Structures are given as structure tokens and as C-alpha cells.
Image (cartoon, rainbow, N blue to C red):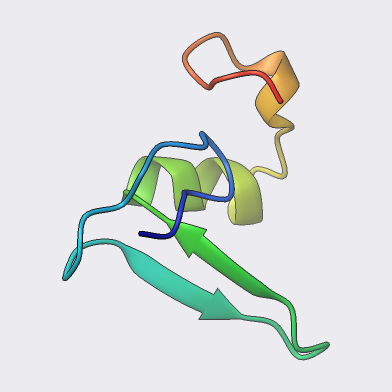
Length: 54
């Protein structure tokens, strides 16, 4: 199972979203909350209380 690129939570099979950038980087997101915080708001997971630290 892949892990969310933002919060590091395991994503069950058939759920979540995979985003591929123009550079070819692949990012997995478990929810729209994680996707929005990472891509639109450009937040760092270390600064958000609910996300796991690296």
C-alpha cells in the first residue's frame, strides 16, 4: 500500500489520489485535505499538528 505524501498515512487499495507533476514526480494523497494543504496552500507537514512528523 502506498503512503500519503503529506501525512504519511497508509492508503487502502482503491482509495486516495495519485498526482503526477510535469517533472514526473508522483505524489499520493489519502484525502482532499492533504492534497489541498500540500499543493494549493503549500504547507509543510512538519508545521501542521495533525500530520505525522517525518
